[in-house]
Length: 452
Image 1 (cartoon, one colour):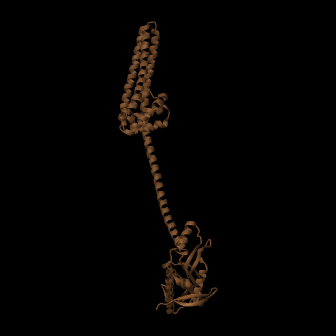
Image 2 (cartoon, helix red, strand yellow; image 1 turned 45 degrees about the horizontal axis):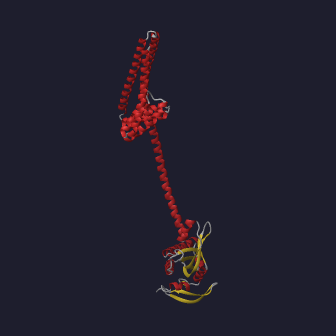
Image 3 (cartoon, one colour; image 1 turned 45 degrees about the vertical axis):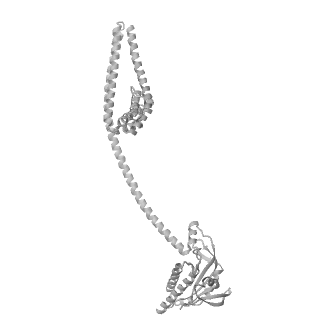
């Protein structure tokens, strides 16, 4: 009886010692893992996780081991340490399986399958597991022998021992069957792994093809849209340029820029502007002898030529009023101060019209004779209207310039004293004396002297 008690104590002690040794080993590995680095730390962490998962991964020991397994996996991936990666990934697969986290289990299972030299590493691990199983079987044999000793020790308990032995043998048979079933399950799992790999490969290829098709479609659509956008931008730029050119044909550049930037143009006061009026002599009489189409054609020819001349000298065309042409110097640019250019422009217009008249007479047709008047003074300039707006100038100087033109003669340039004082050193003039002007009284006027 005493021997049986001693044997029971020995078995219990062995079991307790095994558990104590496992706990002590885990503590030692934890301490050692803190002081190590690199590959050594990965190996120690992997050993630590293996010990914590003994005898198998459960929710309780899985939660405890998860942090160390993740740490080992992270260091192994940074170092490209394949053995450590394979062990860590498979440990994480076991842990998440125990934790019933299927998504994470599949993730780490897939990562373990992608590790280079994975089959060789897993073979080493399987051999290690076989050795552990053999050690466990040896423990079962030792327990069995101990029970046999207990059976011999007491004849009084022989019947009970026989019953217990039979029960134990049945348990052994059940255990053997369980082991065989597990081996069968392992084979099925391996087959399942192969099928899963094949399915994953097919799924990846399918997804790749679908994504390729989508990317191609998006690329083609983007290319078409980009091409259309470029064409639209070109069209917009063309229309914008055309609009700006049209705006500059109507307005001075400063006023046009102000209108584009602010949407409106404030009236401006100009102290010294030279204003030129031209007018066709006996226009009504000549017009009666031309067809409407021919009349418009001739006027367009003359005014278009005027436009080119005044633009060349930086003079701003204001408008045409019937057969009258109005332009001004000193409003296109605040720096314009050489008022002699308006005399030069007037001379070119006279020359143009003289040649035009001669060509018309050579063809036996009627032409237009012109007279010009120029005055310099202050004006206010601005844009009027909301829809078909127009740029115009106002002030007494405009009226005076009109009187200069009305008081001029065919083929002559008539200027006021104000203009004369600005350009007298550049040209020769003939003083006409004081000439009566409508609503103005007598005004000093000068004719530009014709050059020989």
